[in-house]
Amino acid sequence: MKPFPHIPLNSYQGYPPEEMLERAVAFRQELQRRRTIRQFSSQPVPQEVIENCLLAAGTAPNGANLQPWRFVVVRDPQIKAQIREGAEKEEREFYQNRAPQEWLQALEPFGTDENKPYLETAPCLIIIFGMKSSSDSEGNTVKNYYVNESVGIATGFLIAALHHAGLATLTHTPSPMGFLNSILGRPENEKPFLVLVAGYPAEDAVVPIITKKPLEEIAVFL
Ligand code: IYR
Image (cartoon, rainbow, N blue to C red; front, side, top):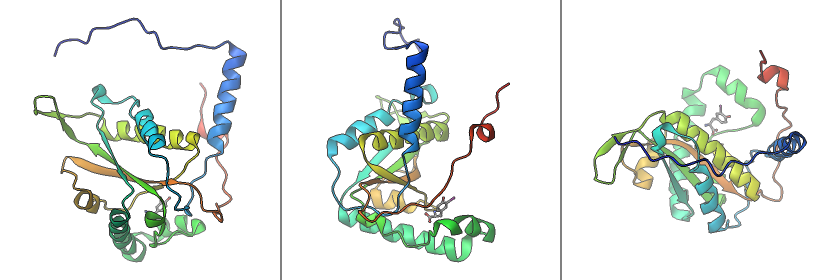
């Protein structure tokens, strides 16, 4: 393949050290406010906000810039109901048979179970797919690289963008997720990565008291 033409970097913005620190602290604090919620209001979310957050997600670094992701935004109540039904079927199997005791014990403090009413209550489900391969402009199949890494980074950007815009999310991972391809009519090369539930918190939303590990436990400086 021919090399891309290169141009001077013109979008970089640097800051003096104090301003850098101020920005780093402010961003940390902004992200520290984020909470995963499980009780959503049914209030619709503005379409343009979702579109901008998806575009932010689409800026994520990824393998060979092949952008191996697909975001399916579901607001249709009937499709949400089908997704809930499919997810609850897998989750029943998970909670009743598939999950090892140790896993159930880890989940116990959160009080999660096979019931996923938020899949219908929340105004917006974003189903994120990773694409093993894509089609180029001539219709040839192109293999993608580092799909999980790329999609994981894009999903992180998306969660941060939605939070920054004032929406709350829940990362939901029914397993296996193949039922999502049939409901959403996605082809076999698209593999569901996760379901991101997005919306406003219900007025009576509650969150568990949890802590995040301190710096000494998450980082090593050599
Ligand atoms: N997917 C299941 C189980 C579950 C697993 C983990 I790890 C969680 O952090 C939360 C839930 C469910 O959605 O209930």
